Figure 1: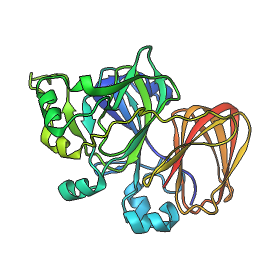
Figure 2: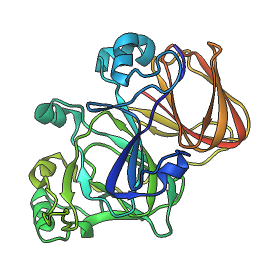
Figure 3: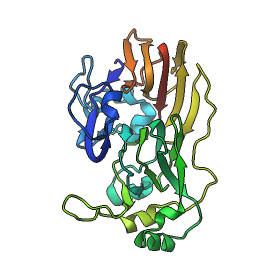
Figure 4: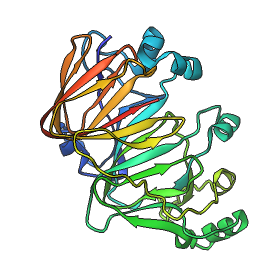
Length: 322
């Protein structure tokens, strides 16, 4: 096996902006791209391999063909033929709806699906752009319903002005929303289940208000209040900095000007690199070489023992695995 690149799945959405296409250096006339699904095994939106002998296969076919060699023994036992992570770039030109995702337990019961724990890494942000994450004060589920009904739910949500490099971890159950002007990388469980809590009374082209999932969300919400919902970390040059470690993924930031060698001989998992700035060359222990630049995502199979990263100038990568 070899390191895999995939065709991006571009999602034209009414709130989509104009940052993704130039960031990924794509030659397309498509406008209003709100999301680029970089690596997806969501039914109906499966990523297609863009390089090498497996070019043209989708991610579902890859997992079925290579099993433990691709995802790792423990991951194959745990997730079977479903690739466990979904990688996206998101560019919001408008404020997105306020939403929440269910836990594994609730998603299994209601939808026979994985839940959705996720994280955000801010790639870029317009001046004054904000994200919402978590509650700013304690409320009950009864008060939650009342506030949705009387349009005051945003009054009790924590709001953050964002800047490039900011990180937010969003365990299933945490209420959140992406604000206008935010451009982020999102790493999440393979699930497309979202409960829309509030959408600022917006309407579609026919004048109908967007459907809300008030009751489904009420039972899915974790009502705890934290002092700070941001992920605090100290940036360090030329060594990995762990951002998030949870049962669903571990993600580190590599901010590099020098060569780094990554030893995966003890890791029983695939490894994904997401390039958020600059460019680099990647070499593995199997003799595979490839170039990676901003906006690209590369999947290294679990068989990979070692990857050497050679930056071209400066490069920033997110590394994630299960």
